[in-house]
Length: 147
View 1 (spheres, rainbow, N blue to C red):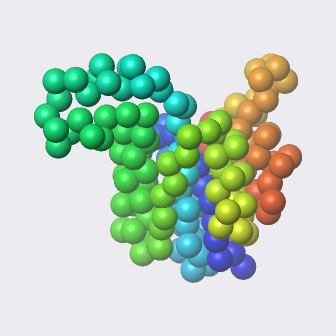
View 2: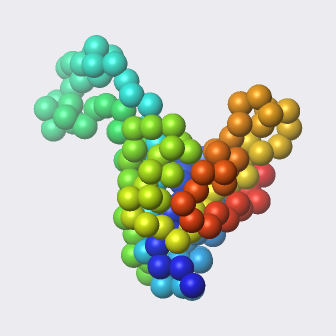
């Protein structure tokens, strides 16, 4: 069946549903689950401003990955609680590119994404993560109904 599954999350309720279903499938198939969350770069000036005045043990963690790491840690804890082997991947990239890059790196069998952004006129103008992933994936793609 599957041995390496990739799923993306941004911490939203719809992404949480995709993660829940990815955990279930990974558990059934005995697959390793890689959870990916993308983030945009933040200027050094803004990071320095936010870190200024913070205690040293906290200041080192202030940056663009701060929120992403919290999202990934929560999703990984859910997977571990279900008995699934999990790895997390904070990636500085567009969400679709982040999923595709991790899938290529780990030689994934399956990418799981939610269908958010696939309906309405927005998909025609901006595209969407599921549309981009499904057209460029190096493996099978499962699009979960989350909306």
